[in-house]
Length: 130
Image 1 (cartoon, rainbow, N blue to C red):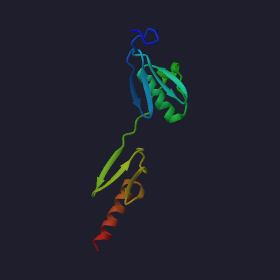
Image 2 (tube, rainbow, N blue to C red):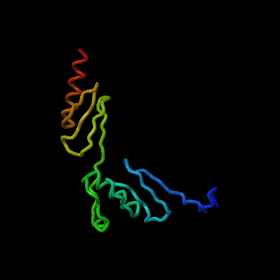
Image 3 (cartoon, rainbow, N blue to C red):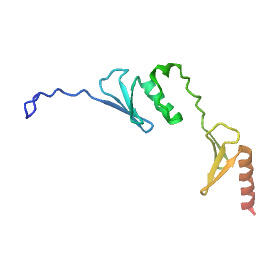
Image 4 (tube, rainbow, N blue to C red):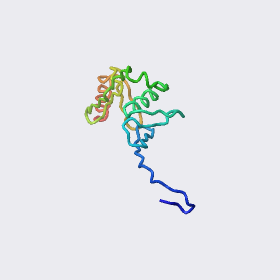
């Protein structure tokens, strides 16, 4: 293929792009170890799992993960978000801690243990019945 200026133009290979969190991942040549992402103005390259681990590492610790240490890193355990519906109110725990429960009602935040929040809901319901 020749451009108007007489320069030959080869068709560019398709670039595969994905997003992970707020980061853009690119794979320009289609290889499995050819992924790149820009993390804090540093280009990190490698396989997709390493790039995702590096992004998680950056978000959690604000440190760039060295590639030679990537295989020795044990990822932190993921804490499952727990949601309980109690008498029509949604009580949420994002941390997995006993005292990590909260709920939002009419723009107000109520935090504490699950049983304490349930007691506050019961108290509020009793007040509205009279």
